[in-house]
Length: 177
Image 1 (spheres, one colour):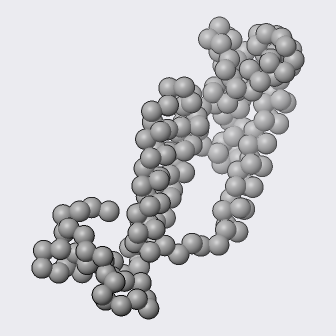
Image 2 (cartoon, one colour):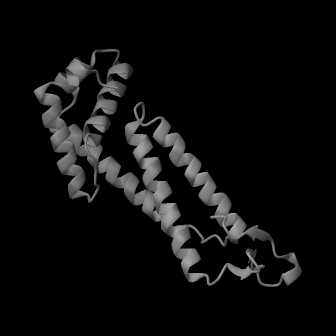
Image 3 (spheres, one colour):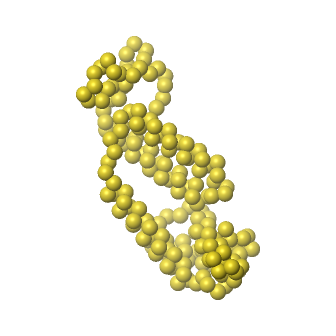
């Protein structure tokens, strides 16, 4: 990652502002400091590849055109992501499957939060994707109809279509999904 001295330079701040503006043109929203993180990662990678200092990279190899190309690449990646997400087949989840997915998303968020200081941009991306997944599952569950019915102080999870009532799982009424 770009060192503090390079990040504190006027040139770096100007190029980070250009990157943020170019990304906004492509309808890519950033959280505070994310443009600096992205530019810093690029400067560090180029410096390592060329075996020169980050200051040399910033002065010699990174221009507004470079930043524009970087923003365009991010826009291409965004389009590829949305294309792949739209092409994906929906997955049918029963209540247990939804619980497993929600638990996995929760663990991913916990890990991202635990490492947010070292990997701020990646952690925020993981949290955003997890939130999208949780919202999608919540919306699906909302329209799926009742998943449980109260039975004398307990909840009986409704069986999937085709399974007998005898196969219902009993869970305590106070439990949460």
